Length: 91
Length: 130
Image 1 (cartoon, chains in turn purple, cyan):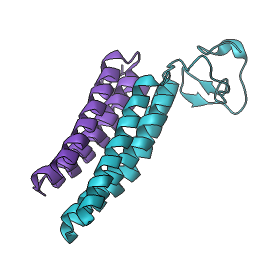
Image 2 (spheres, one colour; image 1 turned 90 degrees about the vertical axis):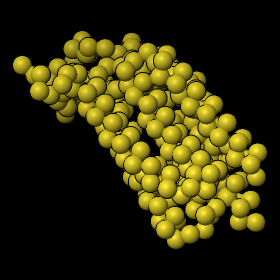
Image 3 (cartoon, one colour; image 1 turned 120 degrees about the horizontal axis):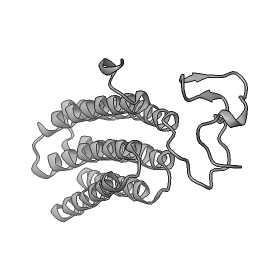
């Protein structure tokens, strides 16, 4: 029981490390945005598994909020990448 | 019994997310990384949330898990589409082994406008020789 949850958390943390490697190495800004999006999904998964590990269901609300914020951040980054400049700085 | 099933679902979801992360590191191209991370990570989150809902076996928790799953299934394709579009339009180079790029010549990178038919090839700003 406990060891299975530990293995699950270990796999997720390894995946988080790999996504971080792509975040550091990524040759272009969209690659880094993809890595950040992936890390948000991974954080949602880690929070859910941690909620099972500690039997605290309140963590699921944190996961909902994090999924929302991650989507907004991804959309904002995509807008920034596509326009190439901030909208209020346009001359 | 339900606990073993839910733990198995958690483990399966973590394996899918690990595969998505491996694809994120190994794939050579932004669009392929997107292909790897979006679908597999969404499936992983869905499996993990199913495992959580089975583990707690409670209506309120199940609704929260379902809300997260529905939200991820709705937002992941939209976010992936926006990143892919932004990456393509900002001229990120594709993989050198890419076989077909149907947008080439149909798009003006200066004005961000789509053209109905192919422009002359020398007006392209980037792209690999065919």
